[in-house]
Length: 124
Image (cartoon, rainbow, N blue to C red):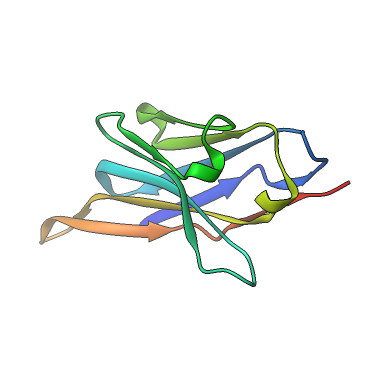
C-alpha cells in the first residue's frame, strides 16, 4: 500500500508564490516518476510538470519560467515552487507517483498513485 499526501495549497494574490509538497510513503521499493497535475471544473486534468528518477523534467508551456519542480529522493518527496502566480493558475493540484511497491508473497509490483489534491487559488 502506497500513500500520497500533498500540502501547501492556499490563497495567494496575483504575482505571489506558493510551494507545494507531495510525500509518498508505504511499501515503496523505488520511484521512477513524480508529477504535478491540475484540474478546474471547466477543464480536464492536465500535466503541470513531471520529474523522472534521472532528473529529467517536462513543463507545460503555461508554467515554464515560473514553476520549478524539485525532488528529495531520500524522503520520497517532490516539491513544486510556484512563482509569479496568475489567476489562471487557480485549480486543484494533484500529485502522481509511479514506481515499484513490495507486495508480500508476490515481490515487487508496479504502482501508480494519486494524492487527494490541494486547492490553489490566485485572486486579489
